[in-house]
Image (cartoon, rainbow over all chains, first blue to last red; front, side, top):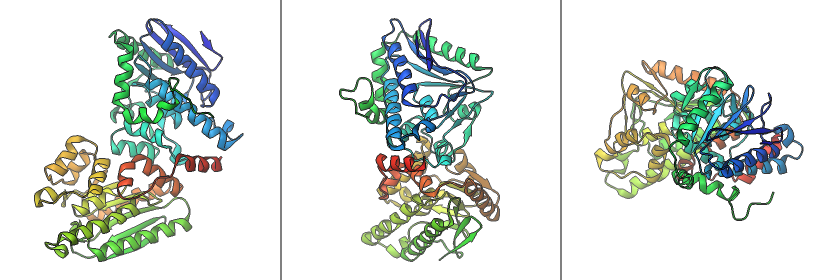
Length: 240
Length: 242
């Protein structure tokens, strides 16, 4: 099953693998986020799916928001893409299975946030950075996104270096500082394979998916409270 | 009490003299005035500035002027209340800030160091020390908020606040409280200025930098009375930049 040419979806055993396709930067706009959210919803509905992996082709995992697209109508489009990403984060937090980000390339700004919104993060060792480029680009950070960073990067000095200093962190550095769980040698396929192996191991635990979702929301309660109204389960979704 | 100079893109605020640099009304007022000058100068200087706070003598600051307060609880509270806006001024400053901890930093002095984004400390003498537990004083809420924000390892926070542990620079670095350790005061000041120059060279928009600082340490900022911009205001800013 595919969701257009923006991302592909495949099953590998019990793992539901979403891959952002193409050699580009996988910049986030409503179209791409919608495709990803459909893929995530498909994982949720897929019988026997026990874990989710999010990966990407090419040099980039995700290089942030599609600013070229946003320029078309800055105020409206910034609001739209931010609400869409907020919804995707909510869907990932509420997903009834463990989630693994396979950071196969550069993950910047909103793309870095997307990676961190997963339970486990594996990252390519040989190339690619985590980079919170907002400080360099002169972009302020909105409340829920700040919450995501505070929850997932709890160490004050690390959070400061990543976000207030815009440090470009390699996988090895990110592992050392506790942001990434595993640095994987080799190419994109090796990183994906490692992520799938971890995901398969998590799926094999046979956890009740609803319990996984409830415990995750309980573990990051402030973040969940700030995104839950944007998720696919929200009783009334905000109009854009 | 304090002097302010500009060295290129770096503002250097010096607590002068060999004394303890006790935070009483006069020094707090001087510091606030100096920090306000820095903020004003930054506005005209444009993107790419930084602040270093350094001290002469054996002390960075030994805390609030409890000698002046004596046994008067109202006086002590006055000083606690007077320091809070200085903390707010530093947390809202539209540029990166570096504390060159060139001597002892106790209680309010330790807080002052923590109000900066980065800390460079001398190795040869001087400790970071929260004396309140030993003296028998409660911690003002904004003190607690700052320590909880900046010292996120639970056992480090416990050691500092609940055990009154006196930290030399090397230990403080290991605990993530200090970023760099230098042999003596001259090297510490030099390293702090060098770091400040590197940060200034990034040419960050000061308003954005301060906003991001607030996103990273929201509880500390709230506790000293800083009001964060709304998401809506941030979106308008983003839209104007596109």
